[in-house]
Image 1 (cartoon, rainbow, N blue to C red):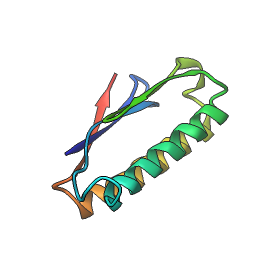
Image 2: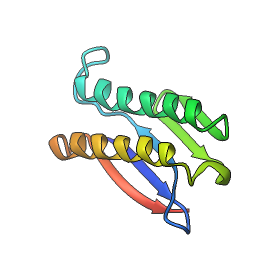
Image 3: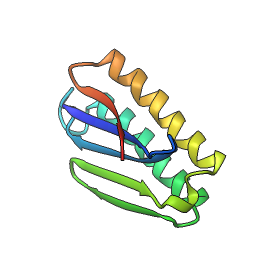
Image 4: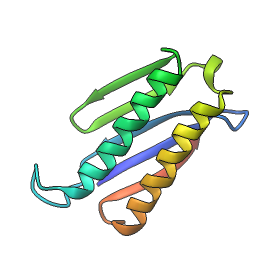
Length: 108
């Protein structure tokens, strides 16, 4: 199962996204659920890197994805819009494929 977590700080601002695990919906290279979630996360990372002005920490490898925003950029509407859109999209995938994708919200 792929577990995706969206983080908010003490001011309820988006602070980051993490994903761990594998979807395992189909064979590697044929997994449309994995492709959907990966595409959403990659697009979010690119948007955050572009609009976040480099003020983020990112780590990615097979089965792990982490993007955390520095405190200075969390107030930007563009940052909130990117993460909120990713959250909405991944939540829809998780509703459709609950055995393969889960979504959590956490405070940091």
